[in-house]
Length: 394
Ligand SMILES: *Cc1c(COP(=O)(O)O)cnc(C)c1O
Image (cartoon, rainbow, N blue to C red):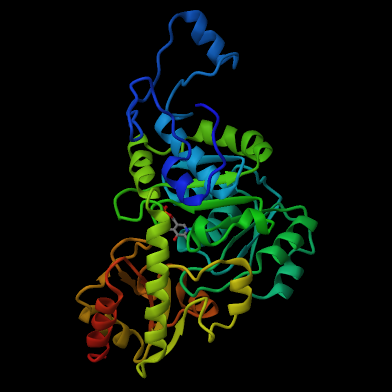
């Protein structure tokens, strides 16, 4: 590559990280190969001795995946990115690679269901002490982080209640306790929130969501500073193999080219839908970070540049009311995915958050009438018309 100009987000989403071969392809090439070959045995020896840079095996690295990693690192402003097979591979690898038996992990309670399971069930099996706090309550963080801690995991805005955690304050408390801070930034996307600039150490994504954005493939990413990524994360990654398929990386590269346009349009529609729902007499409450009624609006606006693509609301009539509304929808479909071009409705209490049980759901504020809506790219008036006719049946 010749002298690279300093560029802005939209340009980086299209061009960032490109490796062009001597065949001069325009769009990124898909290197669907498990391994790579060497000119001679001496070259193979030198590659394994780290004396020359050369692709070896796609579990370690692959050119298509490397293009995605370079593009994501550039967008996030991180030194290093490693792409993973799924978002959960990213979260589990980021959490497991550095913590040891006898150490302590603190997490916000309002986590994606599988992240919650890793903290509540998996880590204790390895002798790691874990504890949950209510993420919005700084006093609870302060108490939990008054003891030496190895790692903090949190999600903001949270799934599905859109709680906001003060990333600057929690990062400062965590660092005093000796912990690294891992932020699951799926709901905000790298476009609306930059955890590393707010004090976090590691950012994890499910690329399945807004990065693909069109419901096709699974993927994840872990991003952080060079030292931690190379010394702590890389040995775990290389030897346990949570690697992303080159095909999925190629699809996600295509998704990223339009991510800023999609996230902007979907966020604008989400805010419009949230205002509509808030005004409906059959909706007990509607949650969206930029609404004046959101209890943490000021904090949200101090660390995010937009409200995101998700709206959570509570229908009258509990589970029955929620099911009636969801079953009456004609454009919005029922699915547990999010960040898709198609609007998707989820009933957390019976699906994504079913396994955590009624008590923990109550602590998180998830009621039987709670619906999580991922707002897509449809005409927003069609979405409001659809919700209007469905609400008439509640
Ligand atoms: C979907 C999701 C994950 C898990 O990602 P997968 O790609 O499904 O493995 C983790 N955290 C959050 C907040 C998510 O929404």
